[in-house]
Length: 477
Image 1: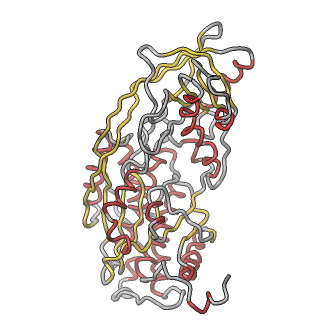
Image 2 (image 1 turned 135 degrees about the horizontal axis):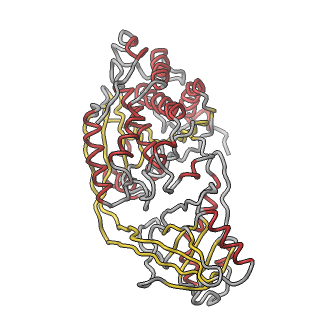
Image 3 (image 1 turned 60 degrees about the horizontal axis):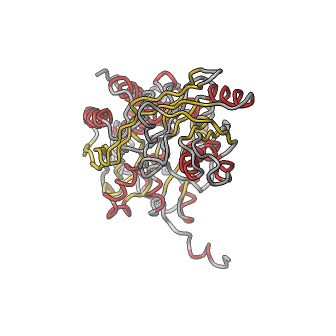
């Protein structure tokens, strides 16, 4: 396995300054040594090779990593070996099991006088069609709401088709609206008597490449066979429907099991006097099976590993422990995040900050926090530091990321380094999610952001749960 050396540059010059850990301050200003080290970390990130090499090796040597599959198991073994070689401490796997689903084949075609093939992909949790497939008339709906409003029995023996567009946005907000048809189509169609469901892919590109994705967050089989059409095929099907009735033959094969092995891979940069307190930065190791999982979410894993390794290369370790978590089985139901919360439920009060990189490799354009009222000045200090790498100051309503959402709900402070997602859903869950889609310069800017805020959180000892001071709350409604 190739491994390029880490060029530290200005970090080595900090050795004299870091002979003792910085003391936590009662105010919100960064201690000078912490500020200078954070800036040096961001400078070093610009020439980092560890993170990008991590993604290249993962996507090349393992490839697709469907949750619960032998490939995901190989990825866990690979990641453990990689983290150990990089010098991480306490490297281990925390096992759990999940429901398992995989496709075996997927074919769709228009039959009759306009016979032609359609490009589809089965949605995660799709049921199989009967042996040899099924053939039925298509009924088009412009939205999930329209399908749900259809009369009971109106789709008996037919295939429901939801033809709803998704629009590009920088923050990815278009996904929340568009993805509802993926999770809701099969259930709603079954209630109306349909035998299958088709949707326009939840994506933003016009190539003949379909987008897969899970239907149900509990990993169970859905109500019907269900598949996503590529955007051009959705357009074609809609044009055909304008000309008259259309019948489609659909043949989907799947395999499933009630339980399959998965797990979270964990490695740490152990702290010093506050080593029992955890700054968690995570990603998810699994991917869908169509591409090689570079954007979603190999990039996130490379970002957090690269950032942690920069901190590890400092002349002295930070006060708190930085824990890198490569979550398993995110794509099929956030199983890794839930498992982590269960397994660490007794020490979540020791988790002082959490964040997850799971939105590709585009530049971080905004930094959000979710801190206690009394800790907002700490967030302001971190945000001010990150403006040096072009990051705008966001609000105090961060979500933290999919797998750390359960930690946020348990009271753990979180941050969201918001990435530019305008192109993310061009590749998301498609065969086109491959390593060449990562822009190295933008990727390294992410490493700079993660390295800086993680180091500040670990070194200052700040309490991000801090409530507002009593004086500041007097007289509040």
